[in-house]
Image (tube, rainbow, N blue to C red):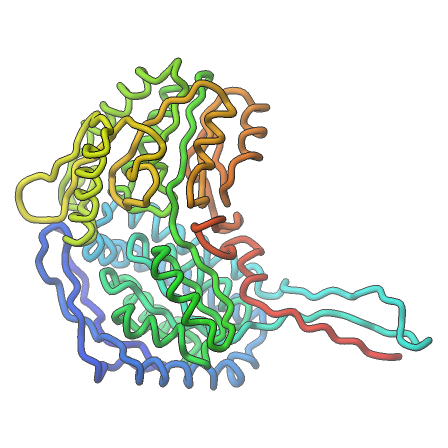
Amino acid sequence: MTNIPQLTTDLFLGGHWMGSSAGTLTTYNPATAEAITDIAAAGEADVDQAVRAATAVLHGEWAATAPSMRGVLLNKLADLVERDAQILGTLESLDMGALLSVTQGFFVPDLIATLRYYAGWADKINGHTLPNNGYMGQSVLSYTIREPVGVIAAIVSWNSPLMVLGWKLAPALVSGNTVIVKPAEAASLSILHLGKLIEEAQFPAGVVQVLPGRGSVAGEALAKHPGVHKVSFTGSVEVGRRILRNSAGNLKRTTLELGGKSPQIIFGDADIEAAVMGTAAGLFLNSGQVCAAGTRVFVHRSVLDTVLDGLRAAASAQVLGSPFEETTTMGPLVNSAQKERVLGYVTKGSAEGATLVTGGGSPEGTGHFVEPTLFTGTNDMAIAREEIFGPVGIVVPFDDDAEAVAQANNSDYGLAATVWTGDVSRAHEVAAKLQAGAVGVNGWAPGGPQMPWGGVKSSGLGRELGYEGILADTEVKTVSVIV
């Protein structure tokens, strides 16, 4: 077991660290099922105080901060995150169970890259001059200005907290907004430490605040508060719909990333070895707790047996255990409720007639572990229709391109998709037809801060990352001067 750094457990509110009159919540180690610590749980009064602090600095010191200085602060924060990468990765592995090699090697570096990417945009968020027909015979100079939306609530998922928060925080700050962060109740420790780094970077008090707490209390209060101008949420469809309803009171903007049931299509002309390796990553990375997890695997019948053999071997090779052990390749699910949910889908898959290829069980002992599990079946089964958020996938055969695309699109979700083929023309044609916010060809879930991210259908509303992230966090004002 690695050394555990000092834990931060208070609210970061108005530039100060404090407890909450609403009590505490307990965070647990999913690898052992043991309690780690109690964390202050923000109540409605805390949310209201945070909104008032965010509003004051929004129209005060933060508004007066030069755009280039916002970039300097983001770069300074990126440097501090890089300095504390080991601490941040350890905390994230501790309370949500991702492998240390993943949190330190992927999640934290993604946060650093996102902060630095948006720091570069700080003095480049421009409006436009607008050619026009004049006004009653007089000339008119018309132009647009991009202004911050205002106070933004960033409600973060538990499966990769720092990475997801970076996608929300960096574009919001560089655009001049203030941000109230509500971490997931199951995984708050890494974001609380990030709050310490935000304080150390010397952002003005109230520009960023961190309010851990229960979604039903702090999350609901943020979505309903009339002083919050936008909610950016990553999580389940059910909660996303509730946030959308609660945001209607003052017509808040919303960006909702609500997960998916992403297809991976393996054509007969694909590099099968690479396809199997990439598909297995899409199934089992982070114990399947990934919004873009490629859990519907459509395979051309000519290579079905080869792919099944490869995926079975990849599943069997997984080593379940502590996220801090170097030999571990798959950690636990985040909590007991998620474990029971995933095992329930395993039972449901068998009951519906799916054929179990491998896995399906839970190892004896403590911790919330589920074996990597693979079924064969049809696209109308519950395990192919509903997001499981665990290491459970289904393989479905197809006979031609049209059938593959039709089955892939036959879903309520549309976040991501992967195409495995050696034919570049087929790759472009299939990618164009897939109903998904992002398509990877010969690689599962390629991405980066430069590339917009978000889904269609029940996978959400709006986009994060890229310049689209800045557009989502700004309002356009038109000015016309009669000259």
